[in-house]
Image 1: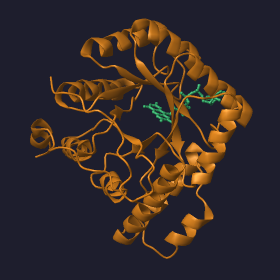
Image 2 (image 1 turned 180 degrees about the vertical axis):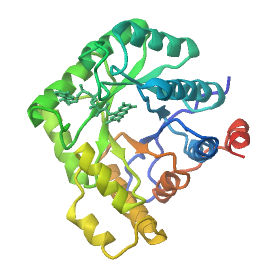
Image 3 (image 1 turned 60 degrees about the vertical axis):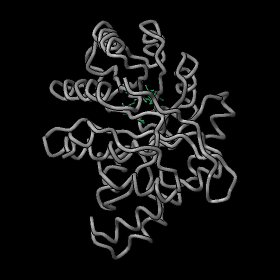
Image 4 (image 1 turned 90 degrees about the vertical axis):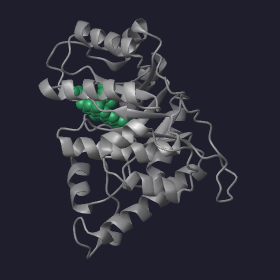
Length: 303
Ligand code: FAD
């Protein structure tokens, strides 16, 4: 097996003296040969930054589920970067969820992202804290959970959301990966509130590279992430999906990451959207060093 990279942060080369946070990158399973090539190409580029892990989202429904599982299998077998498999209570009985965790453990997967998912129709785990405890009974997984700097849309209140997050972390999760946001202040206020609520495990900011402002406005409304006025200002008069929007997006998200790095975050988690170049370009502008050549099997799959 290829040796695993060691995510020890470098000192930030831009002179701030602040260590560069570890990196993780999230992907979703490809649903066509073209998407598959894109996915491998994106991974091949991003593994040059020596990430702490690649995570693969889980679609709980029918064929999506199998796509997710086989993507985890192939990542685990073919890549030098540790894999974190997302796993949702939704779509599973307690027994089928734990059986899936056993399957991942048998493959050598040591990291999970434990989530509720959005439709709990199957009558399995109703509580992510309970799910985390049971998963830790299967294997000594490194478990991440989800957090919401702007509050989960269905949470009863911001306070209840933090109580729920603390329970998930107290159950044995190592860190929380956050929903994305566009204003560093949103994250910093959330981190302060979490600390006051007794949460001491790392909160890892989720970073969404902006590429098409119109699309981002649409899905931000659905997942409760606000789009601040300064974004509207910057994108005013630009064409959806244009090179100009792409460049503005990269500039804004690089600036967001720089703010977070200055504030001492331990890790940045990128929602790559399986897009080659976007996350790469942002991380490159943050002056992360490139470590090694891409694994040969990734390059052949991307060809
Ligand atoms: P919880 O921790 O149970 O809920 C978070 C908060 O919302 C709590 O305050 C809880 O009380 C409240 N809440 C949620 N639902 C309800 C409800 N029905 N009634 C009352 N209160 C409620 N989804 C996928 O399907 N697959 C993935 O791979 C995936 N990956 C994700 C990765 C990250 C980093 C994030 C942030 C989200 C991801 N999601 C994924 C989405 C996630 O499943 C949804 O946001 C889901 O609604 C909540 O999941 P959770 O684990 O945060 O749940």
